[in-house]
Length: 330
Image 1 (cartoon, helix red, strand yellow):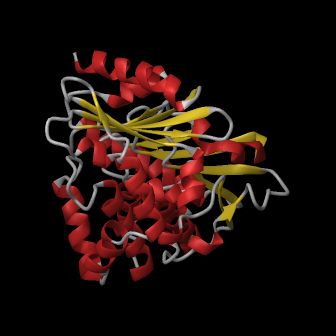
Image 2 (spheres, helix red, strand yellow; image 1 turned 135 degrees about the vertical axis):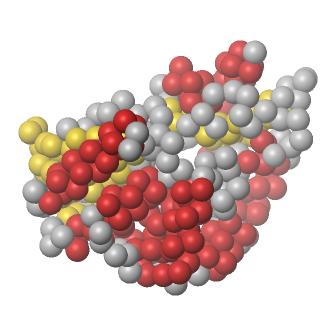
């Protein structure tokens, strides 16, 4: 076993010990949760249930409706709608690139809180009491699969579906460069358990609601490029969501339309907020480390996929971000 592999095994064992030796957990994933965040949350909930532990599953935001089929998804509390009425000492943070991504849920952490930080983002700064971080994992559910398998615990169909969902969404349908042999080995095992891979792919990657289509039409009408065609971007304002009937979850995958144009090295999506900020999502074809770009604006993520939140209206932010990306491309 290599030193790297041995260190990972130690992290897996320390994370399991954290859960096995404590009780009454608060489990939280990042704000604006995606497929991996929700899948990881319900998978931890499933594991804690197997261990006979009590747990409260929460998020600052609501579970995207397209993920409502996941077992335990309906037990994840949206704290913006239903604030927590007590504090917690034992915290499990899932898929949060940094502490800020936990959002307002952190207000319910006790002063002496102990935190298990499980994540796959390279920009994670190990903010936990115990940290289980594997930056080369395709998704946080991949790490959780390893954790469960290392303990010899068998997945049932519901848990396997959660793992497959997280892998499918964070690898873009097993198309991104993070689709490793290990990912495909896991997916193969999940299919043997009975996961319906084709149905999940159709539901999560192919189907589109009418509001989502209207939002896409509006965004594509604004598709812009730098003179050399290497950087492309679209933007969405708050009024666009209201006019089309779309919700925040309908923005999922929108940035890829900017990246997927031939010759584009970095695609960017700008989303204006009601409070005068702009959320920026980056996607890179590989020549630019967009995680480093996002970090300069207080964000983070992966080399090829990252994001940040910048004070200022969309028109004021676009040129500043594009220039930063231009420098990263060299």
